[in-house]
Image (cartoon, rainbow, N blue to C red; front, side):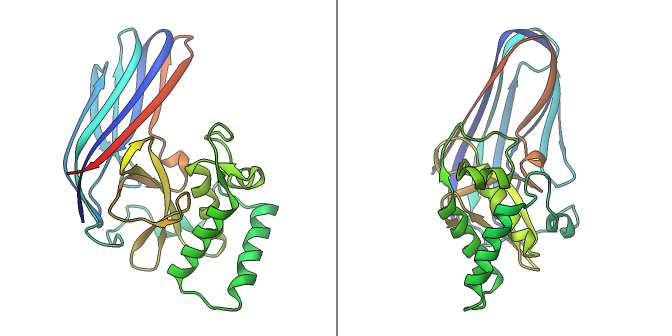
Length: 264
């Protein structure tokens, strides 16, 4: 187990003043079977009205409005977490497990995913694998097939497109692994969270073994451990988007994120 301190910072700068900004944020870690959030504070600036709620997946949400004109929108979340309480999460999910068996627009397989799965199955025939071993195998396969690279993909890039490019970021690694797992009838969900150190938010996959959810990080080829803090989960990136909103104005916007996690 680890006692971790975290700071999540998101900033959106606008090229000219905007107003009537309505937003929804998913950046608050939640207590699960593997982690306990012992302290969590947040500040959103500017904000006239703000409320906290949960979405249909059980993720914590902030939603509100910023009516006054502004060129900068900032969100800071700070707190403490105890991680590594268990190796897997046995807590229930508000959604039916079957939701995570089906492909989405971002994970739907085509020719390249199909060929990759066929290659994996060919290798598996010589040695039958348990579900955990199979998940680790898919994790390692995705890690080997993709090269990490920023600016190559977007939030709309599908698993098939990322595999064709052979490059991407953590979101793409997760989508490819989700596609493989679901084609193999393994319920799997997309996860957003933070890693020890300093950087941006991170994405990985959780696979359901019939009783618990276990995390696998194909970007780093690691089974999720006590160096990870989970924020949210869903069917794919679109269910876990950190920030969504609308505003009045013609401004261009630029978003930056900094996540810092350290051990106490």
